[in-house]
Image (cartoon, rainbow, N blue to C red; front, side, top):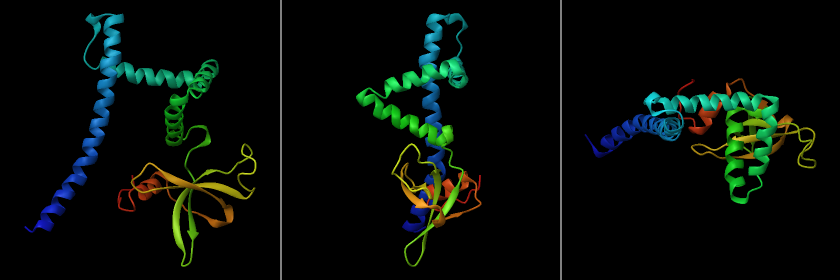
Length: 197
């Protein structure tokens, strides 16, 4: 075997192993965090006799679900909105909290922010095509930001959690029939992903 083939074989193995290891590590970290915090709280407050390994993880999943149910209830929605406004007033906290909140809304598609409209936009000469996602077509909250016939199009960057947003006329956009998950995977992996799941 040549040095190049050894290197390519190693990189192929790394490409298979690394996503599995990173995913497993994140899930392990979440599980350990739930187990240590919620499991210990349960053992101290309720009874150590009824504690069993994995209870903290079950309590964490239950807590997330109950929080989701309460966040949809009218009575608690006001409380969550109030606490959110309070956190967004604290100088350093508002940066981290606001960015995390916006990212989760962006990913989950909450409050109309779902990326379900995939478009192609041509730029330059000869024409270069970019794939993007329409994120907003109503700018009534932001007067003067965009014209009536313009929409906000988000163009994600490959292999980064980032991108840029352009305000473009609807006439420049070409809607394409592609599932948003497929489009996002294609863009984020720079076209290298062959999976359609």
